[in-house]
Length: 115
Length: 226
Image 1 (cartoon, rainbow over the protein chains, first blue to last red):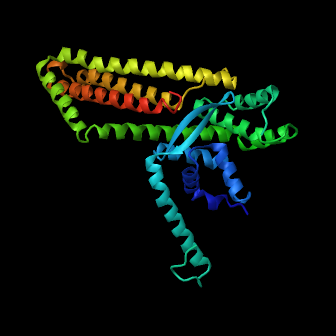
Image 2: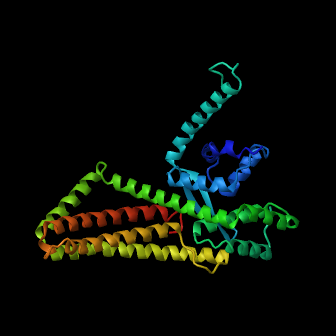
């Protein structure tokens, strides 16, 4: 089963979290980092990644930097001050959602259970 | 990680050129994605990986990516300019804004209708000079990108496209303000109170636009193709 639909809603949080841990990253690097962290279980498609990056940039959560790398130009993304603040709220939002989902899937788990 | 050969790079460039994209930002990002991906495979796997990339980055998909990028850039630019505009009303900048506003108000009541028309052309001329400067800077950056990608067709920065669109809007406001009084049946528009109000509004609009564009460009020129 493709997990693309499941990832879609949390893609922005994934990007923000990765950029919080790494000072700056470029598009291809993000796809590879996600693949590496999830042992290939999660593959971010380019069709979803780039529009998400551009949207976050437009919202002022990411800033970009253009650098010359081996005879080509590379666009690096990094968090803005607003983006840094947003990471915490997005992460707790996602964590809350996962906890609630866990309760639905496994009703025996009592409220207050932390993943 | 290896370096691609000249032949392989040419193949990548040809594949990207075939997508007929005009957004410099998208071309730059797709090219880097292709090369970064292909560099992580052995040369024996080049053809297979190239085919895989071509299946992902189809013509339609790239066009859609280009459209989405333009929309995001448009929204981003608008948000940035609005943020800059609002910052002019924050303390202590508000003192400068209020003083400028008062000075223009005084000036507007002391000069006649024909002079007002000439005066509003001054900020308009400055905006035109700024846009011409941004266009030159962007052209230089894009020329270097075109050289890297080996493309000969017309490509443009989405930011510049947006700025040129805003310029068209600014020009149409002037045209309307000059033509509208005549269309509304005012025989001598220069002495009409409507004309005083509309030219005052345009003077403020042009000045405000010039400031937001200048500051937005100063911020974006460091990180984008303008």
